[in-house]
Amino acid sequence: MGLEMAIQLLSCSTNVVIATARNPSRATSLNALRLQNKTRLFIVQLDVSDEDSIHKCASAVDEILGERGLDYLINNAGLVYHGGSR
Image (cartoon, rainbow, N blue to C red; front, top):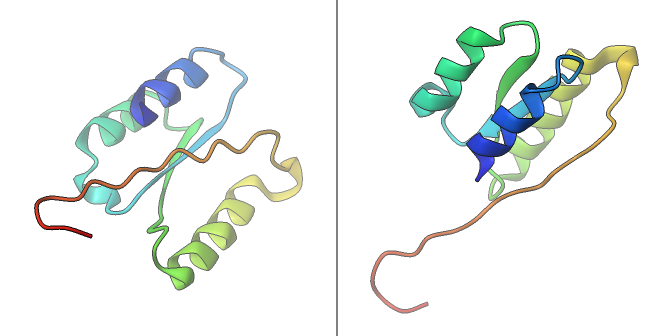
């Protein structure tokens, strides 16, 4: 869902999209999309279970946006548990 949302948001030529991933270097589809949208798609590392990662992500987003500011924030995250009980 996250990748498709980025694709749809990028279909409007005035949108700047900041996508996050736990491990950006392994987000191959997202990186391929970035190659097509170098000035409008930014990929920032974010692990929502790590408070330090959250703070670093916020700083990175602030640096990318500068005075432009943020219009929308879409928080789309999920967890998958493999085996065992919680």
